[in-house]
Length: 179
Image (tube, rainbow, N blue to C red; front, side, top):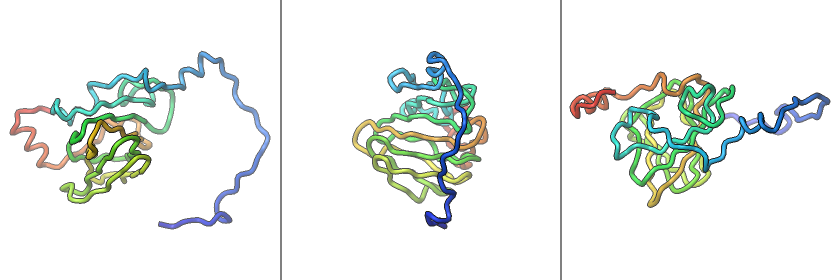
């Protein structure tokens, strides 16, 4: 990883300019209050085992492409909170875009690799930005209901382009699940 010294970074300089005018009612379209967010029962159908479903609350999703979000205005990313019980996790999967996890409460383990053989443990405010196409599964490995914030990188629809190992597809077929 390369790091730039302060002298090499683009310096912050104040410059004159004009802002936009916006009515208070319009500003509210850009505000999401956690207590008003409802879990999306349709989020990421690949985790179709009801015992392992994750409480995904979409905060920002342009045009609600990922799911019903309070802020659905244009953005270059999608953001949600996932609240889950200990031991709950989706199947091993990968995306064509970055997926950034920030542990907000509890402890989460990101299992990664083609068989999930590696792991990164996140405690509150730890962050793991998972590169595109790296297989991963995020599990609540704490002792109580936890919460992780997830930012889905520059992609119009986080539901598109998800891939899973063949073993997951075989297990779904054997269990009679259609995904």
